Length: 159
Length: 436
Image (cartoon, rainbow over all chains, first blue to last red; front, side, top):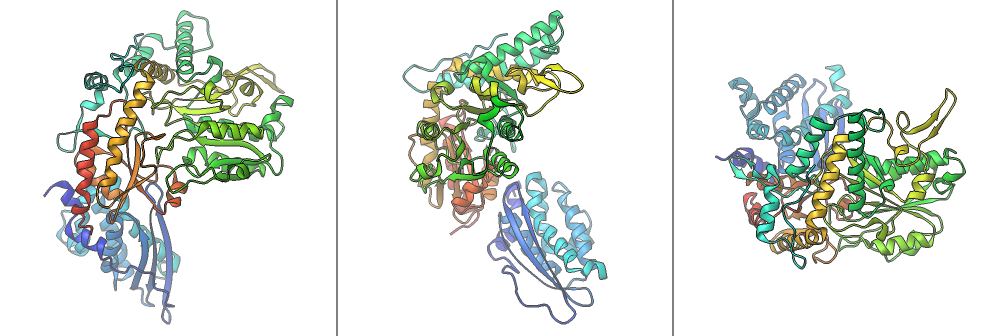
């Protein structure tokens, strides 16, 4: 597989074409839920994402919805992230966020940790992206929006 | 110091194959391979150009043989460094049809435009005395730019308006990527004090109708500021003939070093203009209470200057001058025609004029169903370097309803074969992403 094909794995191309969680959900959060929204822009390329998160009273992600525009890497990464964090506790989300950042710093080598890679699931397909320093920020855009929307929801303060 | 270009283009035509080969041999970086040993196809010269060996050698020679503080000290080396520095100014001035005293060294074109914008600010605050009246803004005054501007020729004017209460207006861009002058007379009016515009768009490649715009500004007594970053490297520019009041261009886009650019100002305007940066080297008499300022250009060159880079920029101007800008322009236009053939690739849409009249080889485009970053990545995989993003022109991209484009741009060393390789790689992009 060429480095280009390692970067644009089929999972990424599929998520970019058929994104999960795309389309902002307007519904009011349920009883005791917390909600937060974040808009993130990559000023160098104009990629952007608006993300809403709904957190249950016991501190789990009830749902993520988002809208955005940008390259296939940024859009697929939000989509994969949305599938990954659905139902996860805030602690798990923090762990996944840390692992994904580690993966993006791995310069194409991956995490060399089966548990970590199992936890990241489909998100490990972004390993190839980490060989391209200019594109790492594309893959991290959605994760930044999730972290910020959780902070804005107030859920991090109460968990 | 030798600055002789090795070839001269035929008087009547573009660069011949052998001439172009000789030019390319002057640029060591073009020998590089990238992404697994592939030859580099560098189509990002509008962002920054590569440098000929003679420019690199000149800069090294300055440090190895001539380095000393300029315009101070009376020792041998200081004299020689000063002379070399001023010869470079003369070379740049001659290259753009200006007088020596009309070229001010700046760290780049962005800095140069800011110097003019801040001069208006300072004059409006009362600095510069009676002489600075042309720069003094009053309530109701307007600054006019265009929708095609690079942020460097937009944001400084927005800021000037915010500081002074002046109003920013702009000339729109038409669907063809050229300035829409339909309402020029209602945009440039008696209230207009500054008309700032790019000579050549760094996105569409369109050459602005300088004559029409200068005439419109003169009719109402407005000063003109020309962003000449994309024109000076690629076509013959004679600033006196163009009749603009100010112009800015950078060294690194015209085969010169980074960290240096030039501000051109008509002599009487520079003489009337209050300084922006103040400090050493730009003064006459300093007391604890107040200071009188040196005449231009030194008045606008506070602090230690980027001497080696300026000398390199002077060398680049000579290199291009000896090559002959008429030939360089014909080469550009030939490459523009080759680049515009991408409009025939299914799913590719060019943002900007599709004809080669009054446009240079700067071609921005979008590919249906594929984001510009992804387009750039596939081209990069073949060793082809293009720019992706908004190219520091967000309003122009918004005008065309796109967040980002990919852009191919040429310089004097770019070949038709490189453009063909680019077209071939671009033709495969949609298939790679399975775009329907």
